[in-house]
Image 1: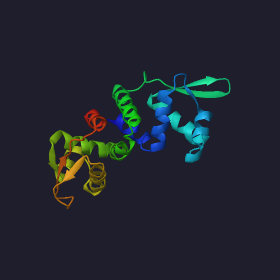
Image 2: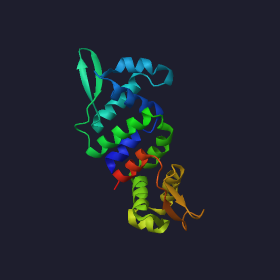
Image 3: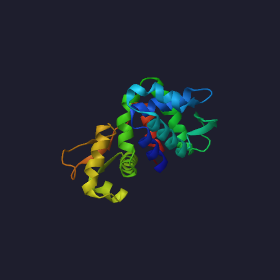
Image 4: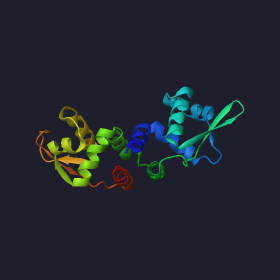
Length: 187
């Protein structure tokens, strides 16, 4: 689950999704400087693009290739966790179809291991009172409200009561196949 959360954290931004897709689509790899020049209007400079690509490299999604004084990156998911590999391929396909707006709130809800654990527990149970969520996930009630709200905002969970401490939360089966895949990879 931690790898999926880390991936969601790294992709929780439209610009970062665009960078991932650009690297994924490049046949020969993509030069960091060239990519930063293309992203210049976004406010993400060379150091930001480079730092982000290094984070993707640590996740095992891309690899760095030195060509003299130039640095290129290409997709290379051989080192990535199999779940991350599956998720990245599905995410890139969804972004190509213009579904990044659907994915961003889900990434926000799943980027924290506690939040992801809450979603996974409710998805597994179908419906569960918030007090039981705390017991199953070893989560503190004072933080649970924030994590539940992130999942509700992402349309993954639906409460039957406005009082967080008394509500029963129901898992909302996502319409989007990529979101369903991400939730299934958490368990």
